[in-house]
Structures are given as C-alpha cells and as structure tokens.
Length: 135
Image 1 (cartoon, rainbow, N blue to C red):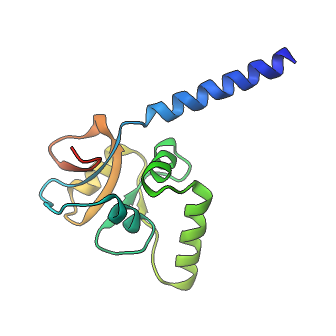
Image 2 (tube, rainbow, N blue to C red):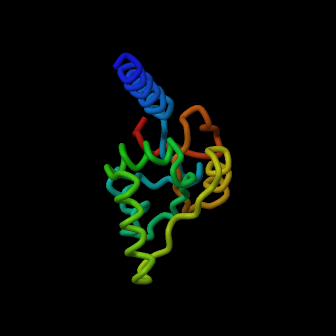
Image 3 (cartoon, rainbow, N blue to C red):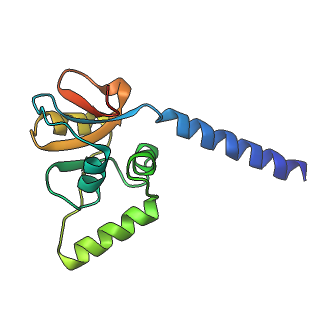
C-alpha cells in the first residue's frame, strides 16, 4: 500500500513539473510580420480551419506540443490526431510541418513571413515576434 501511494505521489509530482516546464510557452511569427493574431486564429491555423498562416509544430508527443494544444487550442493529443486524420483523409488540408525543438521552430518562423509556431519564452529573440500571449 505504501509503495502504491509513493508511486502515485511521484507520478503527480512529475506531472506538475512537466506542466510547469512549458508554462512559459509563447506563439511567435516572423519579426517583420505585423499582423495582430487572436487565440482563435492561432487555433484555426494549427487545426487546419484556415490557411492564413503556415503553422510550424513541435514533435508529436513532446511536452511542449501537448501543453500548446491543451492551453491554446483546448484539445488533447488524441483530439488533435483525430482532427488531422479526417482533414488529411478527405484531402482538405496537410498537417503542420514538424521540427525537432524550439530552436528549429524559431529558425523556420524567422525565415518565413507567413509562418507561426510556438516555442519556450526563453528562446525568443529579435528574429521572431510574440503574438500570444499578448504582451
């Protein structure tokens, strides 16, 4: 019984730590892109409802990706996969390009005027502009 409770406690602690690790994620666009962007527009871009921006994703299953979809799009990973499976199967959209980490996402966004991506706040530099959360 004690081992079971200890396991639950450790699991809860790790979950809290993982959630805190990406509490400071931000959504960024190219530094020269002056468009104002709402949370709804971000969600639509990453869930294939619009092609206003070219969304740049982090790897499937990564903690930052899970946190982004949970907090910004208000979807869990299985919901996101289901949405994209349907869109791809019907030929209505292609899923966002995936890059390995925040540095690669930032580099891609910095090089594409229409790109939008999410990264750790600590990775922000002058090559990108934060659009969410609003400063």
